[in-house]
Amino acid sequence: MPVFSRVILAVAVLSAVPYAAAQDAQPPAPTAAELAFAAEQARDYGLDSDAVLAILAKAEYQQSIIDAISRPAEAVKPWKDYRTIFISDLRRDGGIAFYRDNQELIDAVAAEFQVAPSVIVAIIGVETSYGKITGKYRVLDALATLAFHYPPREKFFRGELSQLLRLNDGHLAYPIEELRGSYAGAMGWGQFMPTSIAKFARDYDGDTRIDLWNSRPDIVASIASYFQGHGWEQNGPVAVRAQRREDAREVTPANSEPVYPLEQLIGWGYVPETPFDPQRPATLLKLEGEEGTEYWITFQNFYVITRYNRSPLYAMAVNQLADQIAAGIEGAGP
Image (cartoon, rainbow, N blue to C red):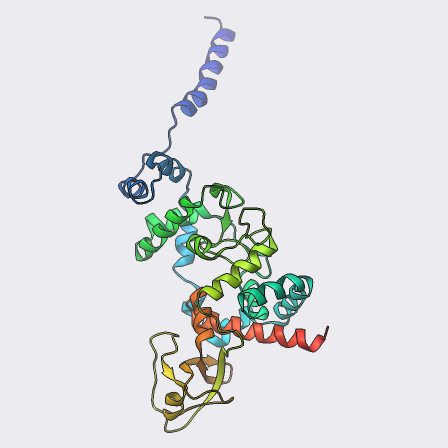
């Protein structure tokens, strides 16, 4: 065979290899856990198991998600350091500007759902810096990675993945394969998980779809709905600084639920700087601040914020940012 012909033949063979490989490439076989999950979705919710597996095959494992969820900021930072992440002049001024730009909408939603306007704004500020940082991960990747590769919370994330699949019916403004969010799968300006979308998200602009990325009416109303649904008390207190008497007993509540009458905390040696109804349910929070230990008495509305994110540091950051925003709005006048 002439040299030229042999070269042509070699090129033809080599060119065919990638094509053949592409033709033979198949998505990886589903794992036993994925097969069981798909069967559960068919049994419990009537989803097509093959369709579930087809969607799962599009998900990509992300090690960076496992790394991120293993070291959240709340677990390693004391309040004095955590606070500086969210409480700043920039975030306060951003909140005041966001309120001013959307005042008619925010006031209408706040009145309808009986939730403080400043708290709605503060949630958006803490979660996404007023929509600037909504997350870079595909939500499908995040939830599948955590559902099948993070045993400490696989039950929770499988539940969220299941709910995401059930939202893939035109309920959302975009296909679930296109959604982007946090490493934990939280979405939009308010960082809603799929189950929160199903329970509390609102189509407030009336276009028949829920859009937590680009519809400010949907975003604001969904956050207000969440707080209303968890028992927010309109005009109720959130938290008040307390002074600890020298003879105070040690109090270590299990969580932020207000389970003590305020007068009991006072009797134990924790006196609020502002008086409230002695029978109002409350609890105690101890924080490490810039100038040492801080004691706070917290109420139902603080507990409601922890339903959004269970960290008391998060709840205090939202509370203090909301106070600063409200003070800035009031101080600026109409």
